[in-house]
Image 1 (cartoon, helix red, strand yellow):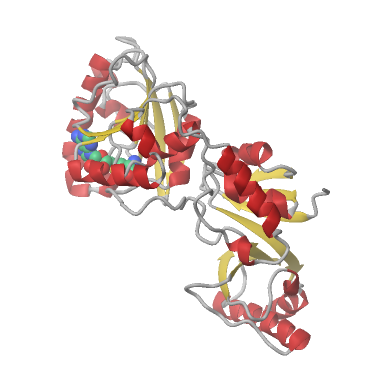
Image 2 (image 1 turned 90 degrees about the vertical axis):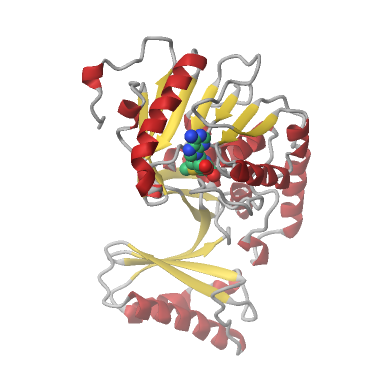
Length: 401
Ligand SMILES: C[S@@+](CC[C@H](N)C(=O)[O-])C[C@H]1O[C@@H](n2cnc3c(N)ncnc32)[C@H](O)[C@@H]1O
């Protein structure tokens, strides 16, 4: 089918190229894919967008462009909203919620502009059928995202509803959990594949381990949740049912994999276990392909008999637990000593907002990638644990850029 719709996949800063590549592989029909800071434009059909929602491990949201207009003032915005064919997607008996983002917006009051958008939508429905949708901020049927730039206003329909990083399995939080799409991105950037042993010695609520298990078992990230597009017209329920059926049939919970997650806190480890079970990986836990244990990262060991693989983790860092930062620094030195002693031949990746992490660990990173964990600017450091070759000389122990 010809691509006839325009979409925008919202992506965490730094993950845009991953989202673009993922759309080209997993969203059949995705065309004219173009990444920019904060998201990825693409074209396709309603099916393309359904597949993107179901299969994207990295995107935060998928938005459908309903209309785009030039404007001068808020009267133009009202008129633009009135001219948009909302009835193509939803009806007057559905509830709506409006959210806004701006870039170089010259308007004095964005709130007033939003009121105008709502008025325009309601006017259109009143004129068409004598009824109008009402606003429900908490449980809307339809989420409309308005983006206002210097000269243009964009009306998007949010196809995800809840943000896509919410896969539906997490109830239990540890300290400062990673979002699921960020955890999946760390695994992709580290080039982890299920045949490589994976160790996360700071597992917290288990996000990295559970995402890895989902990748190994080929569980589509959206398989266990609902999406806002299900309440919209134009998204064929039968096609969606079949798409989910195919995704369900593609799951292989018996896939060989070895994932070892641990954390110093036994309470946190219990929560991670519950999360992993809720995500459907009970069988992996029972037969030891996925393990969670309460161990200090300074004493964590590779799983017995495992070939050297990857360590992927986000250790605690200063901003998250300020009073502890001095002790974190000395702890990371102990963690590095343990890695040097027991993980020779492994590749270690650590996400931290602390740029001095390599010097704390007396290691020279072989690569670093700038990423944002929420609002926090972080570095994803790679250390190749080749015995003796990556140690810093004492004089080099300065904070890295
Ligand atoms: C930033 S959180 C990790 C969050 C995790 N990636 C998630 O998504 O939930 C850091 C974790 O390190 C754990 N931790 C702190 N010191 C530790 C140590 N010495 N050994 C192992 N874990 C430690 C904390 O209990 C916390 O759960």
